[in-house]
Image (tube, rainbow, N blue to C red; front, side, top):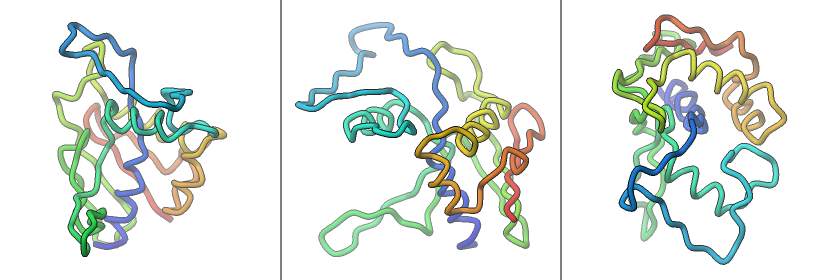
Length: 161
């Protein structure tokens, strides 16, 4: 399960975003910093820490790590992967196929549904574009859009070599 957890965890870099539209003052994100927020695409080279922090606060990832206490510090719990956009995932017996089941209520900021096609597009971009995502996903052997398959609007598979 460790291989599956690691591969699933690497997909936490996935960013699925649409246009942001605050509906009210209560839905407006305020982020005060002395540094620059230079992009809302956290995978771009040169992204500032502040920009990355905003992306973590505003974009759902496919899955995310749990956390645990290690000494006096909180760290990622690599044995606890939980869904954000994915309500659940399955790892094949050989550990080489990950199947993700998206939440049916997952929506972009404009209210349109998030589908497996959207997730595939994001992962295809992540492994192909000149961005920070490609080397991150490479560590989990995710290198080609051919590894990502849409099964149906709420299900897709990732195949590892």
